[in-house]
Image 1 (cartoon, rainbow, N blue to C red):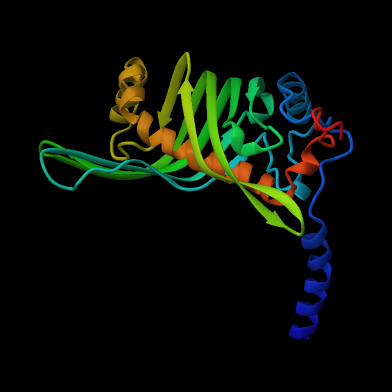
Image 2: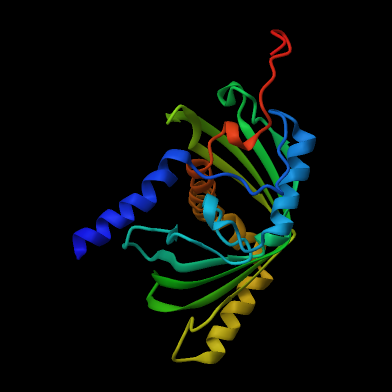
Length: 258
């Protein structure tokens, strides 16, 4: 029985692996390098598919789960140190994103790096956090839920990709992705920060939010790393399923007339 199930599974998968996935028919295809068309097409895709497109590997955009991340990690010694990790990460709000600028996506994708600029009115991040550390004589080790609200969030993704050939088709594989993050306001709530004293939890959260710029500057390297992993996984899923040439209109070399 196990063998029969395995053979059935392979018979179903092999045609899919050979043919690859395709974009939905209602997604506008553009000429290579046509930035204006690409902005329009990607924005329409985001608007019409908030739940993602499983067939091409695009996850839900209204609630995107991304990998565990380490935001801050310090050697466990000295008078002041802290470790801060997040798991069960969910970002809510990518379905309201607007692509404002696109560069690259040439016929030869390695000729120019890909740049995507995105604006979100609000991105809400929910997760479970694990925090441990020491401040002078005070040690802490706690776990709880967090809600992080990034308001008027702007993201610039600078991407470098390799070309892989499978079944006579070209596929992109991201090997370097650098996000640049900017925002107008950051609001965060760490639940259960001090489980034995709710008043201290409220006070510390208030302190965080009154001084959010300083905390943002300190934590930004870890947050950039988390977003790097999240966007690399998201885009590579799509690039791995849909051949690069199948994303665009047929290429016409004006110099050759074909």
